[in-house]
Amino acid sequence: MEVKTVEETSLSLKKMTTYATITGLLVVGILLPIPYVEGYGSVLNTVLLVGLIGLVGRTLLSAVLAFSRADPPEINDDAALPTVSVVIPAYNEEPVLPGTVEACKQVDYPEEKLEVVLCYEAGSTDRTAEIAQQAADDDPRFVAVERDEPGGGKAKATNYALKHATGDIIASIDADHQFKPNAIRRAVAWFLADDDTWCVKGRCYGHNPTDSLLALHATVERHIAEKADLFAREVVDGFTIFGGGQAFFRAEVFDELGEFDEEILVEDIDMSSKIHQFGKELHVDPQVITYEENPATLSAWWNQRKRWARGWMQVAVRYLPLLPQERAVSTRKKIDAVYTFVYAILPVLFILVFPMPLFNGLSGVSTTTLIPNGWAIWTFISIAPIIVSYIIFLQDWRDGESHHLSEYIAAFTLWPYLVFQSAVFVAAFIDEFILDKDSIYVTTSRSDQSQSHPR
Image (cartoon, rainbow, N blue to C red; front, side, top):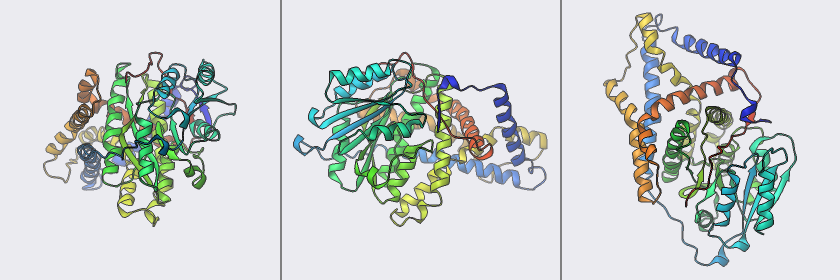
């Protein structure tokens, strides 16, 4: 897989015209039958509204379910703790890597049972290699490994780092993630409590909301995804998944299931699906926290989110036909998996919500939904992100985590951000299913304002 930096990508006028033209043709093609097929517009509008209700309603329910809390058994005897290897792929990570290294030094885990594999790319053009080598020279827990191979993206870099990991438990984190001191010990406790647990996913907690308006709204969005959606799956024993920012694995996972898939853009969701397919457990514990940096610029955010959206579509196509047939997967997990993968593609259709009123006016045909009291439903949809955000803020206050004042304000302007994000899904859909472009892994650029999170 080809790898590019954000600086090496550009949204030219030609590309914008291509995407706009294809989007316009898709929209017109779907809306064109409205004046000619009686009831078509109402049915279409109803389907879109039901889709939004399903998405927003589940998110609100997930936020409420996230009030639950499950704690692993405490481990008081350090002799019972397994060895842990933390693997950190790093490419041009100078702004964030020092904070990540310092956080690893501060974790509450026996020094003799912890190693940190800093796998830096030979192609890095900043001080990433120097920072990694210095960490290894200063602390015997750190190992600096140079990867001098072309391309491949994060999956290939992580697979390379895994070859140098010796621990019974493998913790994989991004180079911008900083452990909360108790994170490793708490994650390990879940493995000791249940032999069928093959993966533990914690919470990626954004710590740079003041870098830009985009970083601010991305931070609030990530709080909703990480605390509400992902943890609610655990609460109801549903289709649990982990994001690549951080996760913990038994080392045997990679012996049984193989390495991360290097040909897919979200190797983490692919591996999550494999774990369920194999009949093993993936636990989500939002109290296992790493503090992360969210993209602060439009180009960095766009490329990251498009990579995620397109990768999810790739995984959906792969596993929608497979997981419902797996005997090792419970019925509840199967249903949740189908919902999850359908909604990996469905947001593309939400773009139709916006031109429909204009089309209605031009065609003179009413497309009133078949659902009564539609105004009340639209009101609910419009205020749901605010309610969800404040539910999470309340839970975090209960658990001792803090939020910047701006995050409380951003909850009220989250919908415009989410609407804009629908354009990402459309672009990803066009690349994957219409233009059939080769997958390109665009690395996430870091902010020069990055610093360690005050723990």
